[in-house]
Image (tube, rainbow, N blue to C red):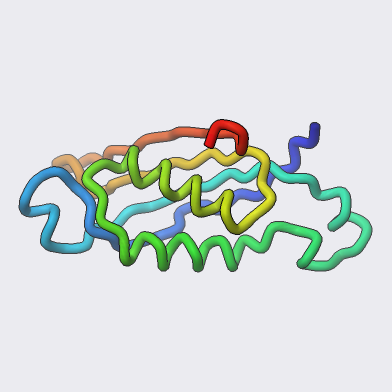
Length: 120
């Protein structure tokens, strides 16, 4: 088993998310952190992007997905983000943290979850 990681930190997205009526009418900012477990062995040798996880492509995909999504809970969004990343990558394990900076008065709320490919 390899424990090579690709990390994407502070991916800023805008999405409609929330359980309250006022949250369902406008997009809100979220910050997403992803940690993807993969195997760098081929990339070590080839030095070619096709042998690595393309973090730019993953970031763009997640940003576009979030922009057109509507969720009530950041937990549900996290599960969907994990499914999206598994669908476009060969990551064996994904951890995601989603922060909702405007959720609380003078504080943010966040969740953290992680899944192996076999769990999805």
